[in-house]
Image (cartoon, rainbow, N blue to C red; front, side):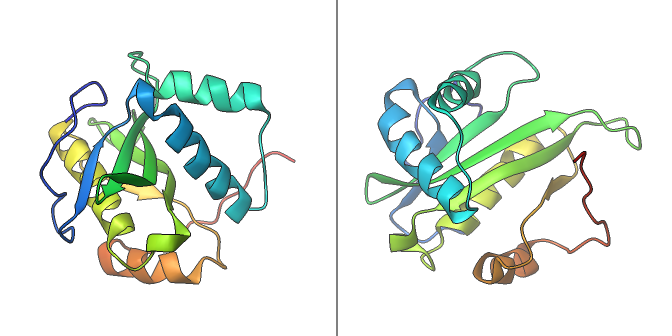
Length: 163
């Protein structure tokens, strides 16, 4: 599945019934905005509306460097988002996949939404021939890390960035 495909009615691999993961669509702007704002609030940050609008437009773009986006629906209601990017890597011939943003609405946590989104990103990476998917989280994100410990592997890398 790519971000331009039509929604799938099949649950994501390993997802509980009622969860459907599909590509982001233009008509998702309001729901995506709600979920994006909640995600940013969780990490105690915000972005100007122009950044959110540009991000949404890029998520719908077709450029190779554009991020892709998936939406998780629970009983037909958007409750989660994932943004990911396939990119080159100096240590591999194949591209790798960076899962930049993952969010499940607080009202449905523990119901498999995060797992369904990650497994859908894994499937996207597999379809693109990208053998590695990686992501970052903050140390205090304990509930999410419990999931990540089950479906991923902690690496010894520490993130630095320009001040």
